[in-house]
Amino acid sequence: MSQHLAIDLGASSGRVALGTLEDGRLSTRILHRFPNGGVPVPGPGGMRLYWDVLGLWQGVLHGLRLAAAEGIQIASVGVNSWAVDYALLDRHGALLGGGIRHYRDTRTGGQMERAFALVTREEIYARTGIQFLPFNTLYQWLSEDPQQLRAAHRALLVPDLLHFWLCGRAVSEQTNASTTQLYDPSSGNWSEPLLTRLGLPTGLFPETVPPGTMLGPLSPEIEALTGLRGVQVVAGATHDTASAVAAVPATGSDWAYVSSGTWSLVGLETARPFISAETLRHNLTNEAGVGGTTRLLKNVMGLWMVQECCRLWGVSEYAALYAAAAAEPPGGPVIDPDDARFLAPADMTAQVRLACQESEQPVPQTRAQTVRVVLDSLAWKVAAVLNILEEVSGQPIRTVHVVGGGSQIDLLNILIAEASGRVVVAGPVEATLEGNLLVQAATLGLLGASQIRDVVRASAALRMFHPRSLEP
Image 1 (cartoon, one colour):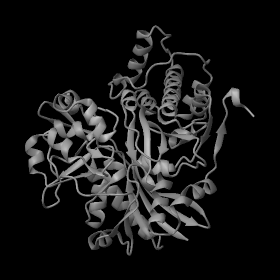
Image 2 (image 1 turned 90 degrees about the vertical axis):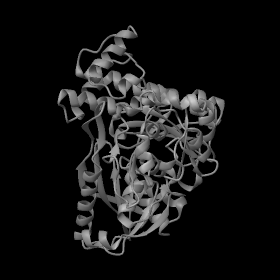
Image 3 (image 1 turned 180 degrees about the vertical axis):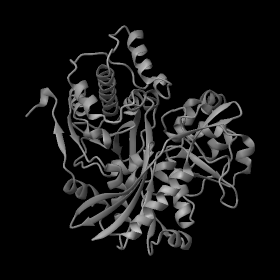
Image 4 (image 1 turned 180 degrees about the horizontal axis):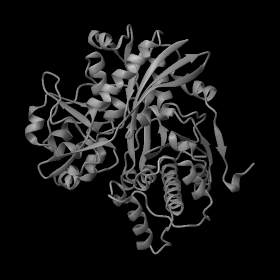
């Protein structure tokens, strides 16, 4: 038996979880959950949106103290989080610029066009293989105050920052580094030629390391703060999607995944990057995975749309809404969830209605109808991306593994099965936690990397959804 800690930071909350690996099975238990979200701060030119990174750190420390209070020996700890956002540090390791800006901050408006004036879209894609999204680190850096970049001694992505605070070692773990659009997948390192052409500093990000890198023990200061002793810090698959994909309970090669949460990440696990005019045309992304694999995928707007509607309605319980949406007749409106209007609107429900109106489709009048439009649209988009992935990779897709929080929504699973004409396997819900914990265990030599998915299948209660055309 071995026990490990996963620190999982998401857009709306953070968690510290205990994982116990015993007899080929993994069990998880949440020790501490704490809130997260954007913090608006007045600044020159208007409001700025930040993450409360010090609040997150306080939540992490409290979770580690709770783990110490369990009175058990913890073998390791590792952090995963969302991608692209970063901290700038001075030469003493202190935060610069008020902390970490939120990827939904409006500062990156127009920066993509500025980048293309310096380096063509085709060359940026050829060097990085990354989907063009306005909040990629590249465009955040272009929007930075040049004085701030000159003052910085180090840049660290969110999980790398927390690992640095935990053990004192600064690295850039590759699964997260590869999302920045500043990383070269062919060399496995930062693209200094691209940084130079864009007029951005080189050398701010530290060396890149593969997922499953031992960083060292907790520092004496953190041991004193938390009461934990003898715990190794492991940079596993620090991008939350990479951890989730590591825990996809698949067999064979004819499968795809949907990591379903605030975002829907729809992709394949491949042996190499696919960087071509065709993948550029479809705006596909190539991100590093566990064991030298590539995650060929597309970011699709996810349950963020439902979450924003519920925030406006003052609704915190989703089950009744999904049940009401399931009672709505099929064949209703379908809109493009990746329309930029849905990225950070003041009123999500108004934008959903407007999109239906502009496309001359029935406008939803009730909450249930609005949710049904969103879920139908997400399923349609997932199916379209699956077809593109199959086409560009030549890899047949017969099974779709839906993991993460969205895998609990039966209606969404059914709609994806129907829209794609493929079997959907739902679960595990906690794929990100499980991938984080099991990559740690593999790093410590407690199981082989090839056994990770065996453990997930042995530990998870999976559910299957067949499209009507494939019903057994």
